[in-house]
Length: 454
Picture 1 (cartoon, one colour):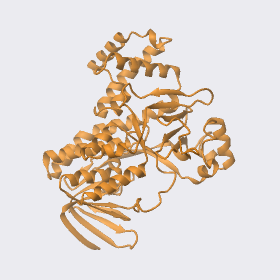
Picture 2 (picture 1 turned 45 degrees about the vertical axis):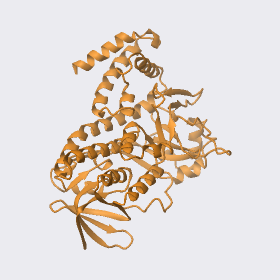
Picture 3 (picture 1 turned 30 degrees about the vertical axis):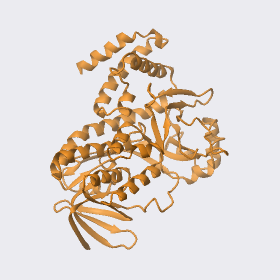
Picture 4 (picture 1 turned 135 degrees about the vertical axis):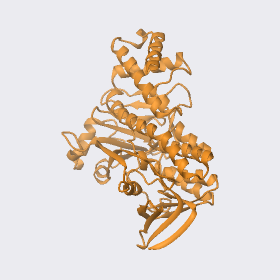
């Protein structure tokens, strides 16, 4: 095994979104960084279709980009989504705005496009080197060595850097090594649902064939489909669907079954989706997993980061935003402690663990909301009441969605406050026929009192 030692460098495992952005943060502080990625360089190869899940960039992610001067450049490439467009099986669509202010939008961007921008920006710093087709095979936690194999040549080698940041995703190789290191708590939970991606292409004139500035949702109780816009006029459609059961992927094995299902459940989308039967059968079915673990570090030698530490399902649009917020917090810890990595990692872990667990739970809750509740009259009344409360008490009342998506309030705080709001508003909305019957002053006071008691 080849020995490569360079103790003044930082090694990042994974050149995905979190690893690439964190390398830029580190480079801006003067550190030399090497990033090792097991996949080929997506900038020079074709991206495999059907496994992207468009990203929804919002406040937390934008802040992390702003720190390194990339926010304005990225915002030129996004499609702002102002709210949810709900598609029932029958009847007209309805629009549910995300917020009152013009800036309260979530921004659709493809994963590959954003990742490419970040890798290019990292290399432009002249302090980051990216190495592709390099698979991490394990670590020695006592001496800080990390082992790789070149997937083209088969050459095995090891690195012994100053410190290691593992940003190698939900299926982290580094985290698997940590499982063998001793007292390490780990849980993973797969949803009974998976996902399948299809495409609505742009119109003949290159225009959008659905409302451009919306996240489209087809809620169907036990499953749903969503569509996010792309800059080229297309939409990425994602079906979230059970694997097994009376209705599940197992029953959609043929093109005929797929078409019959879509014509029954998504009749307005069928004329828009290209290559429906072929792409459905051909494109891979993705898994949806929640990962929680602790600790995230061993001294100052290794830190789990982003999805490696806290993978979540995509139903609050916060997976990437949470990972980018990790960059913000870790950068602040480095500003405080410099290269005292043990203190940097210790403080980062204390600051982020509770919030990472909270957003994981919020994401699971929002799946139920999106597939079951968005077409329910009482849910719509609750959402309208939240908007009225935000209008009447600006700066004093924020809905749970606004706290998570349009603020930097800790996720755990947003979850606690949001659950109190939900308890009060759901109870009150059940007792009235219209939102106009609610006394907003009394509602606000009741929420405030319950919040103070907890």
